[in-house]
Length: 220
Ligand SMILES: [Zn+2]
Image (tube, rainbow, N blue to C red; front, side, top):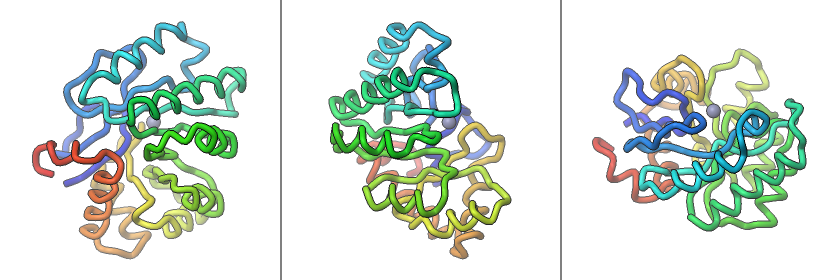
């Protein structure tokens, strides 16, 4: 079975287990989803409304993860506001024992520090990772997962893919148009392993991250 650990598409051509990341304010689907306040939304929507929406959504059995949330130093939004909301998500994850999906741009140390302070004891994925393999290694050493997907032609990115061990990697289509099978094929080729091996590894990671929930999904 294909597993897409982070996507903004609620459906695709292939049968797959998708963790659909909900757009702000959307009603809660019965298929697995992640819910959280993206740092990009902080300047656009009333915060208390978003926070209530997240808390309400987390009561659903289909809410498999919190996110994407985190920090983005590329945007103008006040970093201390971003940090406060990231902290709110981490505390919430600790409380409801759900994994976290981070959106992180140039704030890896800060997010690592927040997780270290709060110790939520849940799996944490740095999704859409574009950093160096050295930064990936720092995150891996601390027990985080590296979420990657969209093919990129740079040598640094290919080095990153080869470097991240299978048991710390999650594959995702994110907001791209590729189907998940294409992402698996691309990664398997870069890692010089059969696609089947990648599929087995991703299933093990899904079990480690989401627990028995994945057994309830048809065809898994
Ligand atoms: Zn995303």
